Image 1 (cartoon, rainbow, N blue to C red):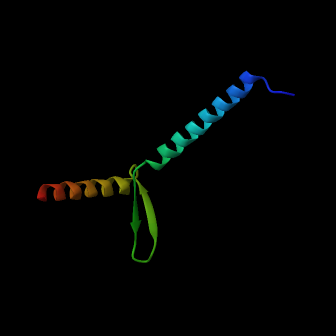
Image 2 (tube, rainbow, N blue to C red; image 1 turned 45 degrees about the vertical axis):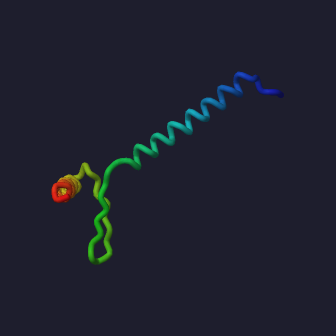
Length: 72
């Protein structure tokens, strides 16, 4: 049986909408700032900017960047 034209169009548009929302969700998740710290033993830790250690690390890194901008 042939599908009604408006249903085909609704399905197509809703599928594009769902893909767009999924893309935005993934992009939002990826764009959160974090820092990756590697220790001498090979251990690697990812710190979120919201964590206590992450806040300190981001503050120090920001100060270093500001300091290097003043020198140039």
